[in-house]
Image (tube, rainbow, N blue to C red; front, side, top):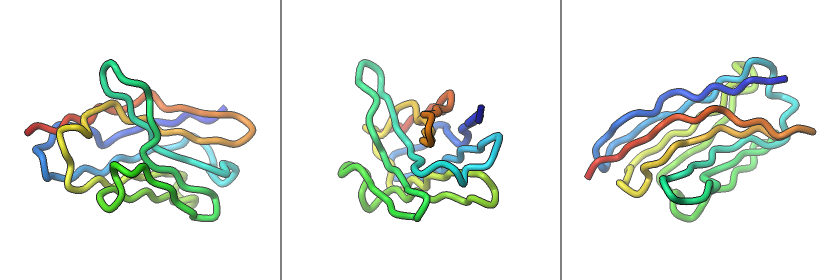
Length: 114
């Protein structure tokens, strides 16, 4: 059983940046896909970005050009660099990892003030 722990969330003004990290308790090399999802109050959880074990990335249209996902298999971490943040990016951000199982972190709050 792998535990995922997110960090890096917080309060930032519009136009600012944050970097989220997801630390895994074990090796992430077996995860063929990892990603970040977010859920705003009253809304469904939605995909933000994901990355395969081969390094291929996929972004939601609303973050293209602003967010960058990366994974470091040596450090067992997944990151999300978020630039040019907007108030509508306010949400709880969750780390996800997929192997034969589907793992989720507990989430980290990102709040963007206008």
